[in-house]
Length: 307
Image (cartoon, rainbow, N blue to C red; front, side):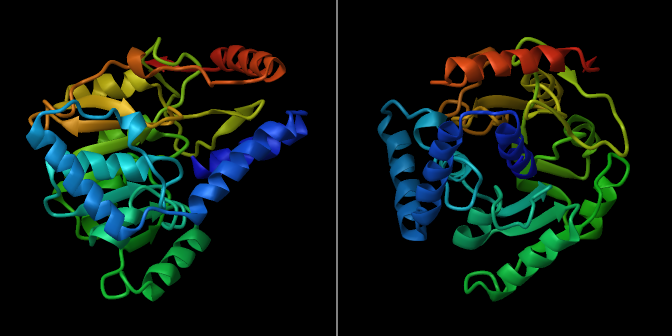
């Protein structure tokens, strides 16, 4: 999604979107990035969440506890919350399309909670940047994550994961490919994550269980800044329900969805429906709302398949 957002911002200016809307987003991101939640505060938050469970009080929703230290949006806070409730086990994470590995869903866990990670990206520049960062960081130089440059497909994903020493139960799988997300997730068999984070993309929202068709060399394209790629939330819900996972919520912007293995924290993290996670972009100016609606109509004419 990181690459997608950069292209959306660039495309937004090209088609005449109101710059003040984008500026507000940039300012908010800048403020949050300048003030990440530090390790000590995260430890205290974990203990607080666990005490809430023991006391039996009503727990907050995922949209209330998100924060960003290294993630793109509020995923860091949500993952901390989930693992406070179900506990961390072997502290291992696999992230597919992690960019440079610095802004991703795994980074906070690796840096602040001593997790071991396997991070994939299709850009050698991104991978080299990430390797330098973790080799020099005081909290990771002794055991940096494994960063691998490679084009991920359903045919090679299991081999690449196993080749780099990861197999069996892991705590977290994060997947955000801007492309063949559904097909790669469906192919993964060598690891059994306790928690899965997925990006969802669909012009139908929660209405249809669809994905873009499989194409080995697929690259996302855009209609007025909105990407044609990936799969809908119902498609992932259907696929993962068959593997014993339940949807527990989405982050505040609705991009990433969180799934937890059944049997883990079911009282604290109950199953929710895809429809309950769907929401309109708030406070969108009328001109932008109309442009977005027209773009979604055009995307619906593109090829998707039911799954």
